[in-house]
Length: 112
Image 1 (spheres, helix red, strand yellow):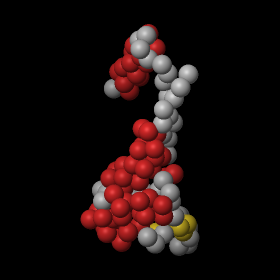
Image 2 (spheres, rainbow, N blue to C red):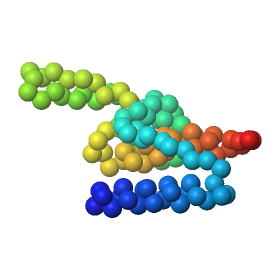
Image 3 (spheres, rainbow, N blue to C red):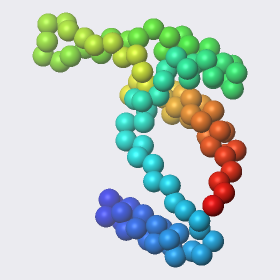
């Protein structure tokens, strides 16, 4: 399956590169993007974008959660940024959290 996905990605990039109407390509490394989300700012923005969903997210994410370290004597670290792995709302939280960025990027005009 991974081989097929890589082949598809290479083919898609080659097709874009050869298209004379394509003025440029943007490569985005989204590795660990869910953990890089600014939780506080996103919660503020989501209150305006989707107030109904914001209630749940605020109740879930306003206080840092404890992530316990295995094989330790109760040691933990606090999760203060990003979404929580396994949370059903994580994808929606991330999508709404980056909506202001997407809106700004969509309005930028590039002159060559």
